[in-house]
Amino acid sequence: MGGEEPPRLAARAPSGGPGPGPGEIWADDLPDGMLVADHAARVVVFNAAAARMTGIAAASALGRDFRDVLPLHDAEGRDWWKCLAPYDGLRTRTRHPERVLFLPGGSELLVTAAYRRDAEGRVQRFTVCLRDALHRARQERDRADLVSTVAHELRSPLTSVKGFTATLLAKWHRFNDDQKRVMLETVNADADRVTRLITELLDVSRIEAGRLEMHRQVVDLPEEVRKVIAGRVAAGDAEDRFRFEARGELPEMWLDPDKVDQILGNLVENAVRHGAGTVTIVVEPDAHKEGAAVSVRDEGEGIPPEAVQRVFRQFWRGPGGNRRGGTGLGLYIVKGLVEAHGGVITVRRAPGGGAEFRFTVPAGAPDYAT
Image (cartoon, rainbow, N blue to C red; front, side, top):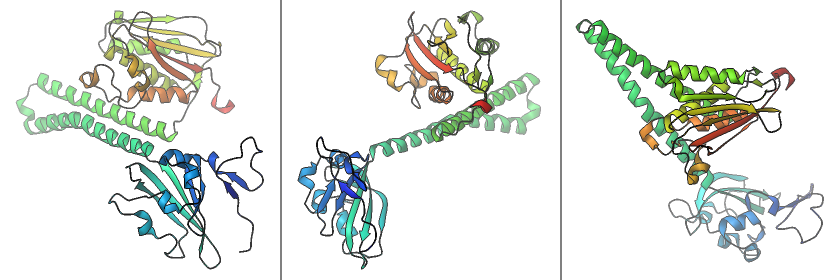
């Protein structure tokens, strides 16, 4: 064939040798598994990622028929290469879309394939790319969990709203004013619950898609903390349940006030719901005096050491589990909002016992200056 020589693929770089030359790609540098077979179906490239995923050493794969090296089957147990017939099938084929296939031991892989053909349509090179299916399976389970959680959380308030509304419409004159007020207050509270859930779901969607919009302005962090505490007290929490400490002078903080309120509100609610004793909020300059650090502490049981790595995942509900309510999305959303500000959040044992959630955020700058 005429035209430019295709890039040369090397299974691995020579030990101590120079890097790849012009037009050369080192297959071992690729994050995905790769198998390349020549015109005779012999393996000429089997990179390190493919060896790791399949458990087959590259040295034992090179030179062998690729169908023997990589005996893939579909979910019904059919030999995939016999179904595909890559060297004997239609000469117009150029690639195969990604699909789930299985190795003999049951390992699950995401497999794509592509052809390089000569002028007469004969296969010159057949390339198979492999990806570990565990990550995608985990994502699919997370989505299924999210749908299940949403259905469960929506069912109860909507049933209440529907029931009380139908009752009032059908028997309005049979109830006195106090009974009507109780029913309407219940409907109002359950409608607020549905609204909060929908807001959480939208936040999760934006965080996962990287589409959080920031509207920065100067924020008085100590004042925001006081507002959150005042809101909790107005909602019925005891005033002496909270203690606030402002330490040192903060730089001018350019943050998104709505998201800061959400961060603080979720952390304080988490401390009230899952903790015990006094909830202490501390605001101080960060270690480099270039931003702020906020700590929210309680005096409860704390976070079990084995759960620390899972705290900021979706659906984590703490030691109380489902008994204490909530969707398990609050801390996941907090982490996403803190990171959207360029900050970090951690959890550890508080000095007096209980849990301490501490986040730092840089001072930031106006939107037009970033």
